[in-house]
Image (cartoon, rainbow over all chains, first blue to last red):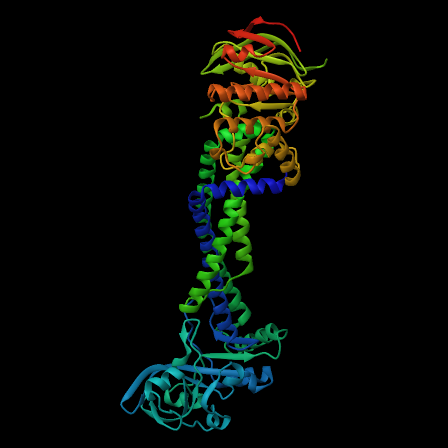
Length: 394
Length: 230
């Protein structure tokens, strides 16, 4: 029997029982669509997080006191401006070094107030991190050197305090001290769980006076290129450890953060795909079941085909193809459904969804494989039917 | 003249719920090419079992069986299927046509398993339907045909492979008398015209009497044989 002929027969058999074929396929459709959608959401989330980390700027090295580990308690910083100067000497370019001290403060403008994160920063901050200014211009070196009381507001802070009015040039108070707004950041959104539009930047030196401290909470360095980043990190950590022998320091790169996050999100995506895979398996069991029914129903047809010369293999192939046709047709429809729902979810909800070729290929491949695996038993049963018994069946 | 089928001392024993049922207890039979034999006997006599053996649908428990010159004992299930395809034509009491399939495609079915292309299959099937007088019914489905027409389609299907033996199991059993006679006329015409051996299983004495030779079975053995003839 020619293979093309076997396809034609299989298709004809599926057409003859449209409703049943459709319902059987539905199991596979749901399974494949679930795989595609859940993998798309997992991948989309991963991509979004990666974009956020990369959005911080390239070749970034973040130096913090303590061991950087998920779940580790933040260490109390003993760093001060002299450490920043020492690190700057190692890096050799002050434009590549950013430092900050952070504090939660109440910010007031007229009758309105908001509690937000106030960061004392160097003027180099936008050169190290990627950060757009919507209005005005950022802190200058003079602002930092002379401890001016000027502030740059995050988009959300500006909106809370001034609504639609232009914030630039307005007076605000931070911890009871008067500041002048000189710029407003472009909206940035959430980044790794922090709403970065809720920040207020003021000169580091001013912050030290207002917060009555001289500590530095974190250092960030933008390495000249990817190759020098690890070496630079080691040298900076070594220098800081020499200056503060009793404190541990960590230097992490974006790649390390991405690596850890990528692993976690990769596992998450895998788990989601596995759960969806179970429904695909259940769909496969449905196919197997219906194929067994089909073999029983068509016993006489099988007997006749055998009488006129069909070999066991011909009959087996015919039923196997029928099962594979069911699942791969279901797989194709499920893929289309999965892509459609993923696009819809990505478009109308905040859940990111990214369709990947591998998930489509995998889902389709698995659905076809499910047809083979769950079609084999019914097909063998059909192939082995005794023609004498089969012809006698009513 | 060569033999279409040679059976020597055939037995066939079934296991039914742990009990051995001896359906055939040593049947020897030779059917020459172009012969016309009626197998008669009451139900349970083993005539259906013998026909299944002669048609290569089943294998004997002991004894030797040659169909179209080939020893059935040597053949695998696949080879036996090939032998059926090439040398045997079946006509059943219940026609056994595929319901959703047109007359021409039903007739062409055995050719599918020969690996012939669709065009060639249709050509041969249409010619054979013409031979049985149904050239105007090529694309009708079985439910659009009368019983006699359905049996003619089945006969065309049995003949399309140009077999050595035509095995007819109660071919008139589901037909009224006039139609049955016409179907027998057709079978006999073909028997003469194509030198295909015609073996007919029937319990109808009148039908059996039309054959040139009657073989009667009872309790799994041949109790009467009107003698080898051509």
